[in-house]
Image (cartoon, rainbow, N blue to C red; front, side, top):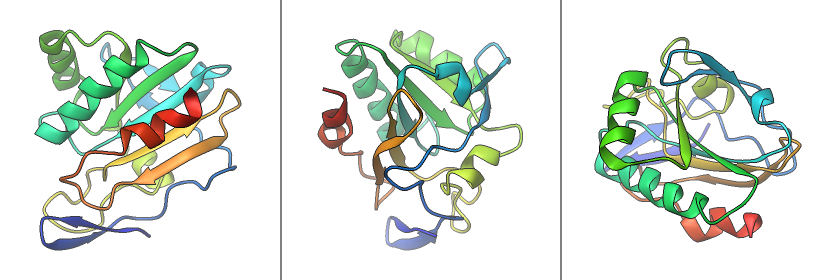
Length: 166
């Protein structure tokens, strides 16, 4: 399990992010139109997983905006923002912000993504939501970058996440 901070409070996650060089676990997540997407749907593309607690918080929204901007500059990349937000909230955010270069996916149905990727928080005020993390996968689904952000109130390291994609 990872140990992270929410303010001054120590939070534990259910596990750890997949390791560099490992194949990312498959997932089934819900899209804004309530259909399902799996990791296999992105086969042959590079994937950046921007994982966070809720799009309705400032840092989460900022990371979505930043990765949306950066994704427009890179080829063969899919940026997937993953949270437990309802797809309706994700859709509202994208419409209000003009987000077009990433996909919002929800883990609200069963939470398996959060458990399989080790990002579900076990305790604290946001228990059950995802911690802030970034994973980058190559075209075969192999992890080529990982960051468990140590403090939920901090932004991810954008430059490090984007570096293996340049």
